[in-house]
Amino acid sequence: MDLLGNALLSIKVLSNSIGVFDFGGQWGFGLTQVMPDFACSLTVLEGRCWLCTAGSPGTWLGAGETAIVLNGTPHSFASDPDAPVLALLDLLSRNGAATFNPATRRDAPLHLTMGDGTPRTRILALAYLLREPDRNPVLSDLPPSFVIRQEAETIFPWLSSLSAYLVEQKGGHLPGYTATASHLADLMFTSFLRSWIASDSGAGTGWLKGLSDPQIGRVLSLVNAQPMAKWTVATMAREANMARSTFARRFSELLSQPPMDYVLGVRLSAARDMMLSQRLPIAQLAENAGYQSERAFRSAFVRCYGMSPRDYLKAQHKAQG
Image 1 (tube, helix red, strand yellow):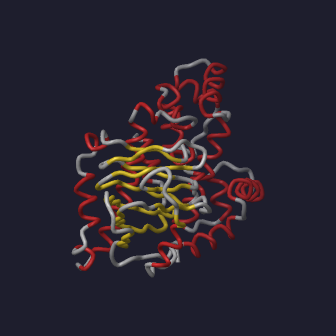
Image 2 (cartoon, rainbow, N blue to C red):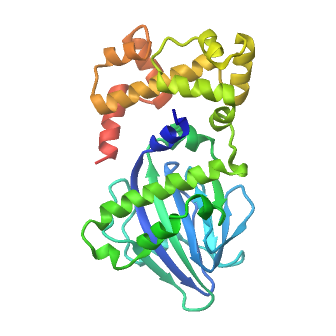
Image 3 (spheres, one colour):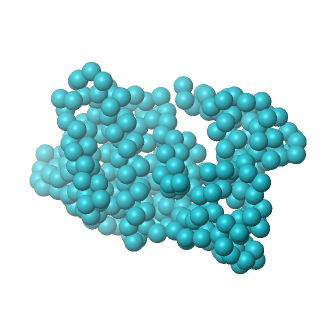
């Protein structure tokens, strides 16, 4: 079972927006107050720019390189470290762009131009609103920002072709562009994440680190494939071919939680997905997830998701329009 692939597929993009920025001379834009479900990627198509994110030293991005910003991390991009930075929302407002929200559906890429000097920098900007990124095992273990250098092209040689399609001005006026571009933008996002994880610098911590361990990774794959099975620490240890105490210690060291806590979390997530897709009764969800009563299930659900199953279901339908 490709557990990483399934985890990437489980990333739910509520909405995305595609922008092409053409800047010249000295320029800068940034976001200082961002919702935690916001993520973005910025690929330098031409020229270079300076990236600065909260809590990290600045770095240069050259042509062909991509910056990923997750968890609503404050960030800015500029022509150089000393350039004045304009709030991105003000820049968008000046160009008549509507506020980005889960209902956003643009008919064509948003083209922004700033400055008439040289050198010029051209950027493909992809913005995303994600459903509960802090509960996705991949997103929750990745750093708040990172850079995909040109080596990503050797892993995904088709990224250049996708970028070229998304920035093509004529494409935005063709029938069906919006649906195609939206799917491609989502594909690029998960591909960037996979590229980082596959690199030496993207080994990750927690769930990703556990997944990279042959014995613990096997157990994680089995639990996620059969979350409702009668798992115990002993049965998981046997699957890992480890002594019970050794397995429990190793699992807790890598994932920062005991094995059975992980199992309960996976079961609760599976029950949540069944609730959203199949509208099963709470009693059946509780039974499937291994809880002794509806009350116990509801209490666990509230602790994990901050609201009752009924309120959660209403909130998700509202967020998806």
